[in-house]
Length: 337
Image (cartoon, rainbow, N blue to C red; front, top):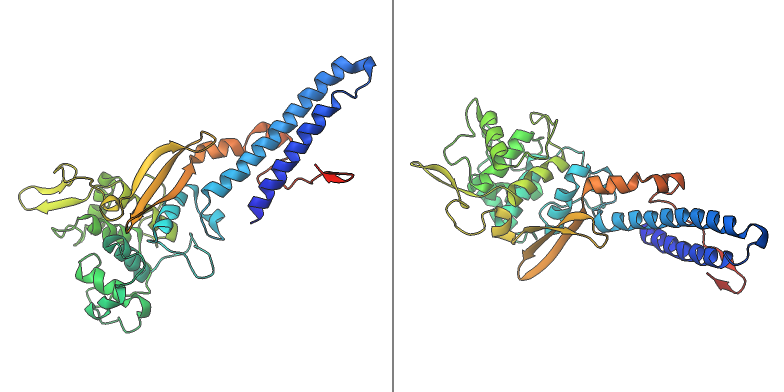
């Protein structure tokens, strides 16, 4: 991996530079020894600090990056959601190693994602069993997605169109995605996501549940991008409490009913986020989940604002160092130092 090679080169160069500067202090001419030692020490410390900062920046990218070849195009606000859901096996990338975060997502793809998070079947072992459950007239061309759509339709997590079609290859708006996700949490038992004002009810429910807290300046009437869907789903299963509906009391959260941990992520995957810090004491959140009996750490992501502050450090900027800087390895006779 290029990042790992950069780290090793940075570390080796930093070590060589520090040792050379330590030795150089004892070879200065006597006539200006005091001032030159002082100036050289100041310059050495500044360069050394810049190298160390660059090393930390490079390591931080290796720790927090998503496992996609186009991970740098994922928006900072959505990177955590993409990484956690991909780690869980809920939201997967493409065969070419990309995630295509800005690409539009289809109704079939959303059905597959909702199916996995609702059933815990992240390996898609049982999805094909539900292919015959479909009640839509256009499933002949749905191919790989028939099972996901069939399950979600019968569980009333997704809805079709008045003409009896589902349009699996069609684009899906932000409001439509929210409706599917919120049904998985327990909403729409009273049909509030139907009728002329359905989008308004969806928006109000999502806002109250905390699903939209990172979504700013996005037109939810437009086609939803893959990274936006990841963010909406992640907040719904990690932060929003599941609910129960009764005609007498309406929706009551499981948290209020004291039915144990109340999020869909915890119920199905034991998904837990813990405020933490990494080895450099940068604030972040460590997410863990269970699939079967094995607990896995999904991500330990440094806070975005902190990472940006490090990247814009004046010392590193003055020295012309970035996370992609490759420093030459100095050689002396007979050895590499």
